[in-house]
Length: 106
Image (cartoon, rainbow, N blue to C red):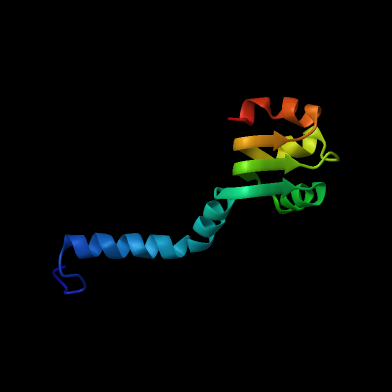
């Protein structure tokens, strides 16, 4: 402020926050994408979940209507890739997958 870079403390803090958000923009975008509420039907195939596992990512499923997990998804694959499930409607998955994810279903 004394050097004239910022007009006041508020300006300095605002600039610092913008800089940090810009630095982490890609991570923030991925986080928002993973936590988006889907309206309608959302289906997760074995291929989708295997791609997530291969990239080291996980998903949080938030769906208003119907969420389905393919019948060929193993409980191990589901546990490795699905952090949480919140469905306001119906969840369609094998009994084994539902049992494996029971603590993660809200």
